[in-house]
Image (cartoon, rainbow, N blue to C red):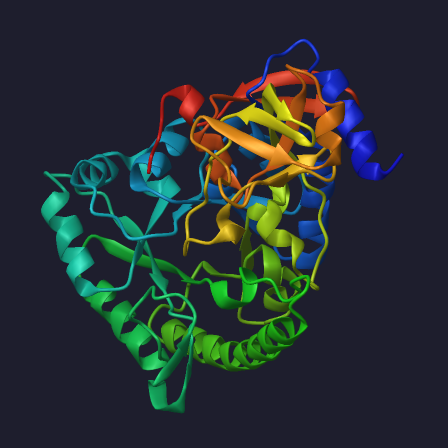
Length: 400
């Protein structure tokens, strides 16, 4: 029996009393993945990206482990909710236009002390001030550095279009703009190198592309290491008591941690290890989060149909954004249909061994987005479900 077949047997036994559709997290794999993130961070704390987890119980579990500290959130409303739930170190990783949220933040000392917001433009400071509604608390802010690699005088850009702040001078000017404005305090710098941390460099069947990605990432790492250090020096000249410099992502943990300028690592997808993280040479994790759909039809030899399954992930549309049939091994989509809104035909020899009601296990393309489809996660230890915990959706929240 292969390791994957053994996992399927465990998951089927553990959930035999539960009808699909359902979602699980294998805690043995989750904990092993957490340990691997800490190992690769080499002594620097890992800040957990909540968008990749979207479950308070699992955020609490990972933050109770040595080597993890703080949350990187994705909306202001989520940040405030987490702060009220007892989390006390929350970095909002994206700018917000939530007027009501800023009014709450500016009016509550506890929230203002727990939440740091992201800015990269003086206009955002003016927006926050206009939203205060009389609140006078000092707002903690983090400056975001654009990490993209620019070549040929800026004619070629590699990396996400995020912050307009690219050079040390631009980030330092933004720090000065914050310092001049009462009611704000710069406490950190964030730089997410998605083109390094979020792009697989070992894609099966595409050796030339994989080599090109590795060359690009090596060039980008060298350039960013030098520029990030210069940015930190420039900002510390304005803000000597800077609290943190956040960088990295699941695919670049050990590389980013090696930079002296970086004080903490941001990561989250490496806890669940969705399918997009199968194509990396920098690490190898264990799939921890899966969902199961029931067989509802047997249209013919070598074909079964399962309920639902059409859960595409965000990003540029393409086959890599689709979930993949994972267990039993050997199933694939009908290329003329793909995963459907209500039903999904699956092809392959294993189909003939599946009965009505049997579970087919899938892996989502991206980590936390799976939780937008399910109200709870069944936590598996060994071959038993030991707890069932709500996702954000299960607690009545869909923040984005």
